[in-house]
Length: 436
Image (tube, rainbow, N blue to C red; front, side):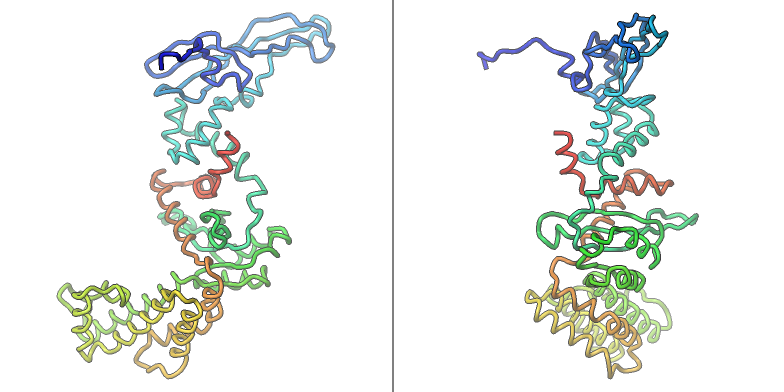
């Protein structure tokens, strides 16, 4: 580009100091950091009490971490002027609240960079602290406070919620204290096809009362707008929904329904294994060898797997496993049916078949039948309301597991909740708009 005109470098603009009301006066490059000396672009030497012109009384240096440029962290040395008024004997120094909060160690530009790095770029707090050249706790406290102010405490993030999902989540794997929390997910974008699910809130504990209290704390208009609540088989969530959201439809999602049938199949297989051999399964036992094949959908079986199942069910000692496997496959087929009306009829037929006439020997199917009868309305409601699966809730749980692994675990639940909301709260578009 031979005709390109290049302007003289402007350190103030390049380092975005003008956005903070600063002007650069000098710089020093060190191996570990870049140090920029600066001052306020528009000093105010007038007394706020009497309006007289003040007398300069020297300066003080305030060191602040700024957003990094290149591979070096950037440190600002802000020269703050001090003044005195001969008329009213008042002393003060320049107002730097536009640059940073009082006693803060990070500029407002550094806070925006750190929040963007955490929410948009998914960096860890350790990487953020290294980029700013500050202590881990300094970066963590600053980002969480800024994240709450800009994003988490914004009441508008609850607007437009019509479909929610609720599930439990293990936030720590230690023996001390309660390790469970209840997570509430906004499934409205998934139902409407406008986006992905997002984390609405996280509450300590897992019980009916925990979820009921959270719902009761929401405004009446918000609760009246909730149309569907997707959940697992925990009756506490169902009862809390019925009491606090009487007009909402409870939907038991397919993942947990199929998991109930899968657990019944596993228990039946282990029981039959023990009845035949008097011990747990070993690698050469037919039932143990086929344990994963039994959970494969009938339409996805390979030729080798089909031969293995045919040989397994040819043994009359395995008839109870075959019966339980048949129910499991019928449930999977109902959910995979493209026509939802047909799928609903197939699932209704499964529930009806387990209502009466189940042999006493099939204890696992009898137990499964009782559960399906009690939650039949919630199970069948899924087929009338597409996009209300709790699957996105499980996906967010997976993201939180990754977050906890990146952080090498959390000990403070308040920090975990704040970090989880910043990670999975759907704030990336909002943050992009704020920092544009």
